[in-house]
Image (cartoon, rainbow, N blue to C red; front, top):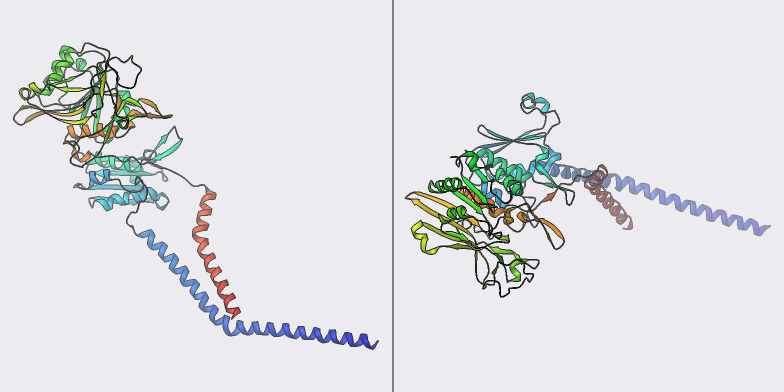
Length: 506
C-alpha cells in the first residue's frame, strides 16, 4: 500500500514539473513577443509595405515609359524592320496615326505605332480609348462604341485599317499571321505618295493571265502603285499614264498595231518590265522580236540547266539559284539577293548594234560557268549530254537603258523567265511552296518596278519573319496574373518565415 502511495506521489511531482516547464516556455514566448516581435515586427511590416510600394511604383513607371526596343528573335519580328526604317527615315511630311479603342490590352499594336513615332518626329500618335465621347468619329467612320480602327492621315490623304487588316490566315498551318507592320508601313507610304504609279500588264496574248501573278500585283498595290490589265488592241494605244508596261511570256505573237504602239511607247521614253521565258513551243513571235530588237536583245530557245549542285534546288537543275550582281538596282543598299528562276532562257545582246541603238546594259543575274542549255526537253538525264550546249556563264536578267535623244531614255528590266514571279505551287522536299516565295523572287520583282518608276525609297529586302497571333485563354490569363502578382508576395512571406526561424535558433 505504501509503495503505491509513493508511486502516485512521484507521478504527481513529475507532472507538476512538466506543467511548470511548459508554463515557463509560454511565458518566455510571451516575453519574446512583448519585447522583440512588437518592435521588430513593426519594422518587418513597414519593410513589406515599402517593398509593395516599390513594386507598384516600378510597374506604373514602366507603363508610362517607352523603353528602347530589344528584339532577340532571329528575324526581328518584334521590332521595326530595316525596310520600314529605310522607307521612313527621310520622311518630311506630317503623318498622324490615330488609334481608336486600342489600349493596354492591345500592346502589340500600340508598341508598334510608338516605334514609328520614335523613328521619325513627323509621325504623330493620338490614342482615343473612349470612343463614346467622340460621336464625330463614330459618325465619320460608321463605328460602334467598341469597334477598333487605325486612321493614318497625311494632309487630305487618308487610310483606315480594321483589326482584320492586321492579320492574314495561313490555310496550310491553320495559323493567324500578324502583318501589323506591313499594313501600317504600306498605309503610310500610300498617304504620303503625291501620285501613285500606274502599272499595266499586257493580257491578251500572255501565256498566263494576271491572276497567276496575284501575289505580285497585290504587293505592288500595297507599295503605292495602281495595277491594271491592258488590251492594246481594245484600247487603241498605251495610255499616257502608263509608268511601266509589264509583258510576260507570250502564247502568240503581237499584232503589227500592238508592236508599233509598244515601239512608239519606247521611243517616248517608256519603261518596260519583261518576264519572258524561252520560246519552247516555237511559236512565231516575229513582231515581239521587233520590240526586243529596239534594245538589241534576243532570247534563245532552250532551257538553262545548272551544272553546279549548289546553284539548283533539291537536285532539279532547271530550278536555278543565282545571286544578283552589283548593279544600279542593288548598289544603293548594298543588298545581296538570290533569284530562283525555273526553265529560264539565255538572254543575248547584239553587241555590234548596241552603240547604234544607243543601248547600254548591266547584267543583273548570271549563271555559273557549269550551266548549259537544253533544247531537247524529252531527255531524261539531269546531267549534260552531247545534245546540250557547251557549258558557260549565261545572262538570265539585265537592266537595259536606251538613249532616245539627249535627256530622254527608255529603260527595260528583263528576266528570261516568268514562272519565278507566279503563284505556281511546286513540291520541294515534300513541302508545297509558291515559286514567287522562293528566295528573294518577290523582292526582286517589286524592286524592279520601284527602280523603273524612280521610287528608290522603296527598293529594299522586305521583312520575311512572321509572328503568329496568339490569344491566351481565361484560365491561362489567371495563371499569368497569379505568377506576376502572387509570386513576389510568396517570396516575401517565405523570407519572413526563414528570418523568424533563424532568430529562434539564436
